[in-house]
Length: 482
Image 1 (cartoon, one colour):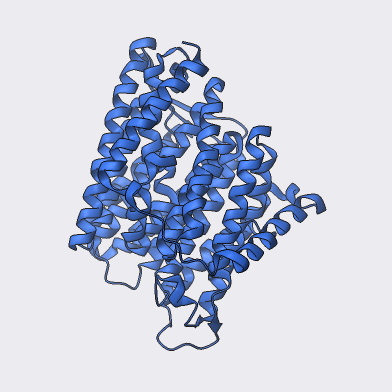
Image 2: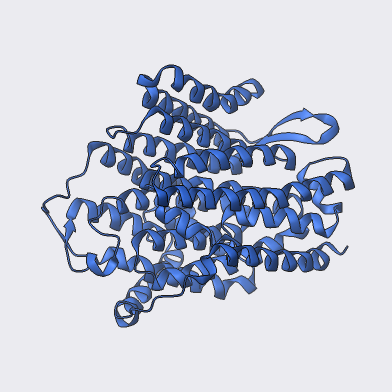
């Protein structure tokens, strides 16, 4: 299994190089590499032990693959498969497929790293690949958004690297477990880097503009999997060092509420989806021990929603309320919206039930408010008018194959927590959705409030990072008792 794991890690990078040599096979090679990841991710669910691969004994450089990793790896694989198929009959060049598969491979690497130095390398590679994917259209707007993303990511990784050095200085090891005996500034710097990279709380407000202004397949990868490269290490650290668990949970609740607050007022479809990415990342962090399952359901549904949003006649929700969309597109949009709202028969239901069962008492009110906000937000999509036949809204075959893969994944993932299906668990999500729809029609459908975008401006983002760093220092002293 060790040899298989090493080959699996190296495969996307080899394929990325091979695509340049055989550009006519670009999409075939990219699809093959991502399907291999589907197989590897599924294999992790059929083993009851953790695969541990030590690379450097003296430095604590170790790779670990377990069921939790499997959820994230499978998410990455299915989203990449869908994106490749979505782009199949477009004019995307070999360069795009190269960056997509390298991004896929580097994100996979972050899901099996259990030390800070190998994680740093994987995150840096993913940042470069994501930058090139965002900049792919080569327009002025896309170049600025890509450069903005790259600069913020580099600042985050600088903080992270300094924290990793402090962990090594305290333990002579880069292992995650070293946080337990590391100074509080190590916790503050490492967590700040991961919070920024993952798009968590106010330090992650770079995310809405980046995800909303990227091309739809790139947005699908960014929101579906790339941001989780910063989330997974936070979950792993919380499980390895229990003293850190309260810190992660606090940021989870705060992030869920912040993202949904912006989303309920947002009238731009892609920006609303981006803010909901922030909110759903909070759900993943709110219950670290079950965050993998929620990450899978969120990755599939958010990739589907961004791909669908790219086919809509307008990004303005007010305009969409005035012009019907094609019924097949609406049906796909409604199914994805029902899943993220927590409707039964879709995996979003089981993920929300499982997360709510693993909350601490002080988290319950905040997370229920975030769930209600989710139902309010996605009522905007569910109640868009539609007609069976609409001119100029015929979609490509690649689009439908990609959407079917993602939606079938949402149905199939129910097996991960079939115990959720009982009367007690079903009533609460249905009541939350019904209340959300009622509030939407009574209040939010009529509102035209536009929240200021000042916190998203570049200089304010840097200021937010400084404030979060101070907060993390305080948390480090409070919970690590140093």
